[in-house]
Amino acid sequence: MDKDIASLNRDFAEALFRLVPAFTTNDEKLGLAVSGGPDSLALLLLSAEAFPGRIAAATVDHGLRPASTAEAEFVASLCRERAIPHAILRPVVPIRGSIQSAARRARYGLLHDWMKAQDIHWLATAHHADDQLETMIMRILRGSGIDGMSGIREKRGHIIRPLLHFQKSALEAYVAAQGIDAVDDPSNRDQGFDRVRVRNALKDLEGFDTSLASQSASALGAAREAIEWQVEQLARDHVEPMDSGCLLGKTAFPHEIQRRLLLHCLHSCEPALSPRGQQIDQTIAALERGETITLGNVLCRGGERWTFQTAPMRRTS
Image (cartoon, rainbow, N blue to C red):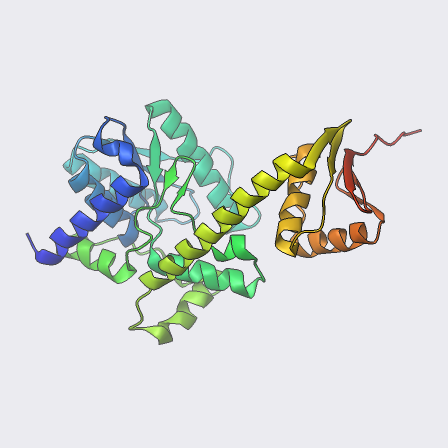
């Protein structure tokens, strides 16, 4: 076996075992999201090498391009040749609105239902180091805080991304070395998408090790987890339940801690409430001035202590 292929196989298996140590001791199945592009084909081939007989793949055909049906069948044929169970998933409702975000929601919904039906415990996607760098830059340009800057998470719930420390070029070479021509999705060159524009801008950085971006994202993720742990401790000590809400008994904290305690209190009243960064900052400033402000359906009263209560229903005549 080629040295580079053997090395990639070893590194991939180690990444999977690090993310899900139980893979070494149980018979849980690994689900794979495979579109047919070089990244997801690398995921398919690497997983087949690491866990023969314990993987299944699914391809989501959104029906957005004339070639999508043939591409899904291409993946199905590759899986048949390797005795890998495979399913083609199609949304019942056509994709509308913001194409990328709507397609993403539909894709993960279909994959979740497929996993449940097939008793699959983990889903691996093919996000890699180049994706991570693009994501971090996009979030910098959108003014994200530490949560956004920590990039794509390697593990979230039952979704894992074992390729996040692998460069795209290495994955493409891995697939090509096995004589497979990957699907070429023209939307990856569509300048109408922010990610494509960022990707093209990064071409001038050719020669840089994009996997280092994943190291930075991991460091930021560790910092985020440390802050979240600290906020959990502070919430236990200083947030008191009250009728239809809660009270934050101490508010003199660094701004980032204030922001997260505020969100904790808001979510205890209205779990779906998701104010944006500037709105959070304006709310904190108002509460520090002792003002009363409403966010969503939550009435927030400031002063030395802050209270949060579900606002009473308005009467309609």
